[in-house]
Length: 216
Image (cartoon, rainbow, N blue to C red):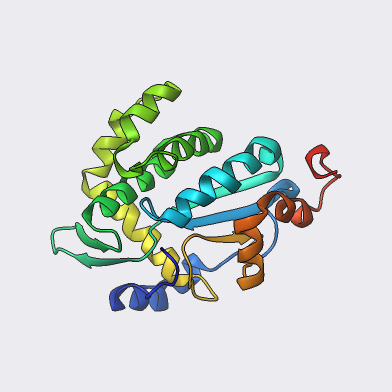
C-alpha cells in the first residue's frame, strides 16, 4: 500500500515556506481550454502502477488532445542535502524506488513529447519492477535511454527529484495518498476517488470545450 503520506523533511517545508509563490497551484484549465492534469506518484507504488495501467493510459489514448499532462515523481520520500550540491533520498520502498524516481524525474525532463513520456512511463509501470525497466521499455519504443540513465545517476537527476519533492510538499490541501491527481489545479478526496476509478469521465466533466467524441 502506498496510501497515506507522512510529509517530507523539515527542509522541504522550509523551502516551500520561502519559495511558496514559485510552486503555487494554478487553479483553472490549461491554455487552449485543455484539462490541466498533474499526477503525483512514485515508481514502486502499487497504487501508482495500477493507476497508470488501468486509468491514465487508457484515458490518454482516447483524450490526449484535450489533456495538458504533467508528471511529478516523488511519493513518500525524504531528501537531505549532502553539502556537495547533491541530495540523498530515503523512499518508502527502499533505495530501488529512489533510483526509479530519479529515472522518472529525468524522463519528465528529457523526453520531448508528453505522448512519449506517457508511453515510456506506462511501459515501465506495467512491468513487475518499474525502477529497472528503462532500457527494455525505451528500446521497445525506439527511444534513446542513455541520456536518461546518465541523468538519473548524476546530480542533475537528484536535483530534479528534489524539486519534485518541493512541489509535492507544497500541494494544498496536503497530499494524503499516492498517487494524487489534480484536475485544473484542484483535488479533494471525492475527486481523487473519481480519478482512481473513472479518470476518463472526470476529464470529460472538467473539459470546457466542444463535446469530445470520447465523452459522448
